Structure formats: structure tokens, C-alpha cells
Length: 173
Image (cartoon, rainbow, N blue to C red):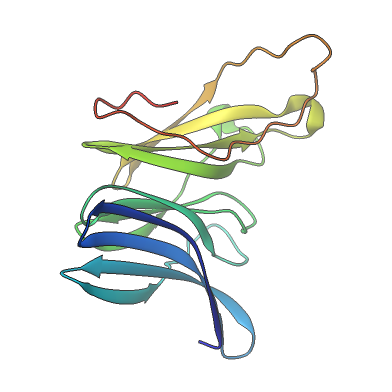
């Protein structure tokens, strides 16, 4: 690659890490990059492309529950992309917004011992933006909405999630 950028890294131990980002391929096309460190060695792979979304596939966030069990989120596509690593093999997972809502954008991820979660926003515009959370592992993911209370005068506020964390039991915030 001519130019590469790393956007996020997650480590489950000193010798097991995953980093995500993108690189410029021949012909100036942007491609997603997945880097895995195991036994002190880094291995690079191209991010898998989902069948239902077009556009660039550049992961911006990653979280891991154990070595070879991670999720990565793509913030640059024409729709939501969740990449799930199971047993060291990455695949693109089709994710829809809660209740079939439009414009799901996943922006933060976290994992615990038995699963992972991703959160972000969905909705059709400034007055209808809502929070969503997607939970699961492997190829099984479920989306739900997150009830929020806005203060006086904050109706129509733009929401954006930049980070989340989960405790070992899977309680996330």
C-alpha cells in the first residue's frame, strides 16, 4: 500500500492485539485494513466487504473479548458495517437499525467475556435521531434502541456516541 492509517487498536493481552484502519490500494481505491498480533507477530488482512453495502469499507473502531474474537465498525460506508471475527476469521455482518429505522451509524464498540456490543445513532434527520445498541457475537446480532431523556430545549439535538465500555458480566455504558 502507498499510504496506511490506523484508526483503533484493542489488546486482550500483551501478545494478542487487533488494529483497524485503511490503506490506499493501486488505483487510489481505499480499502479496509485488519492487523492481528499473535505470538509477537503482526499479520495484515483486507477487511471483508459486506454484500448489501457499497462504498469504502474502512474500519474505525475495534473491540475484542478474547484472542480471535473481535468486532470492528465501519464509519465510512453507505450503511452500517459490523465486521465480526470468530475463531480468527473475519466476516461482514448485515446489521439493521431497531424497528427497521433508517441511517444506522455504529461508532463505538466494547466486549466482555462472552460477547460484544456496538452503539451509534439512527434516524431520518436532526429531529428524529435516536441511539441504538447492537449486541451479539459471531453471526448472531440483535439491535435495540436506547431510551434517552433530553433536557428542556434539547429536542432535535444531534446525538453522537464516541466511546462505550462493558464490565465482565456484559453491562455496558
